[in-house]
Length: 254
Image (cartoon, rainbow, N blue to C red; front, side):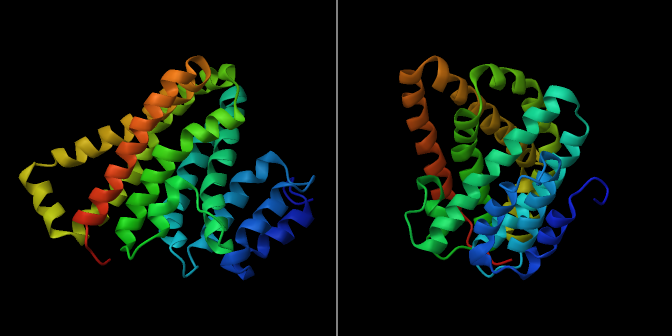
């Protein structure tokens, strides 16, 4: 044992940089199913997997870079919690990540890519477009699935205050992405100047709205399935509309 970590698991983690991109997903599943792989180590495994992904040549590297920054913020936030809040946020982080990894696995194996990730993996897109479309897919398409498939309604209600509090932390990631966007696209830069920075405020507001909407969608899934179906269709249309806007209006090279 080293700092409470099983030596066998540490050896496996050290092999991540040498694993090919195509086999990252399989290796990750092997790790999280080891009996010695404690929940305390999940953030380390997730960060290691994403770090290795950023060295890949595939499209997954671009959202992977953004996701890695987000994961580090999540881990810091989770570390500040105790008891039930820590357990619930850890559980969400673990299960939420799998939807991105499943999409990569499908792309690499030639099997159907999940609907919310099809736009991301199709077409000739810039790094900035991929980061934005990845965020759109993961937030507006994966959150409700991660919650409804892995939590009870009671757990979701317990998670709610911790989930919402994290909105403040994720603004830092948005700010970094926003700076990258206005450096890459003159139109976005000019819009930022014309609006006196209100476009950034609006972007933060939309990010918070997206995440809170996914929480409401999750609760509807349990409490009012018929209303959930209608609401989900509207969310899907909005998600696809956002993708189309990103494709049409952001023709940039980073």
